[in-house]
Image 1 (cartoon, one colour):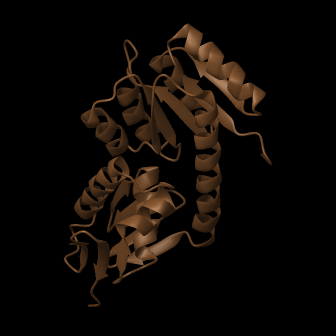
Image 2: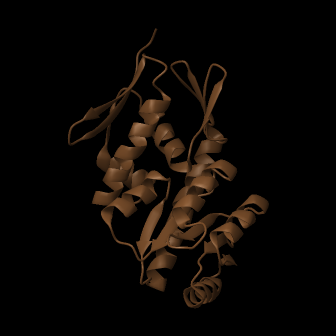
Length: 233
């Protein structure tokens, strides 16, 4: 890696936390290990991280609750979940909260490193693009993709990283079909069942955010993809 990425690991299991911390350090990452959700939140409020790795099952503040708070204090921070829970509803909930990935325990350390490097590389490339072309007009809305803010008149909606990325992708391809596969490969890096379900959740979020302007519509083309339709006044 060209740069030493800063990663926050939030894991209450002392054995796994120590193992992952030492392994990721060995692979060249700068790691901060928080042993509870509350400690993780304090770190996020006072430090910058390129990525957060959140355990789901923790006392006092679980990973899902922490993820919700991240959207308020550091909406630009991408995060992934680690969990022993494999229920589909938990996976979908994780993606709905804005997770960029979801890994099930027991963790394969080598797979984790590959996922992290792929995520950071992909997110880093998109950050450069976002800064080059940061302001977009969408009907009566304005999108600032760097601040991840969608504005309508005097009302501002803060977007999650994934919502922001998806809206930028659709805005850059207006009034044309964006296939499920192309969106998923571009944003998630892979086209699979869980990511397709997650994509539908994020599209629902964007439809709700954009509902104040009747000239804007995100159409679902069954079995193919989505079209962001923006009708000129």
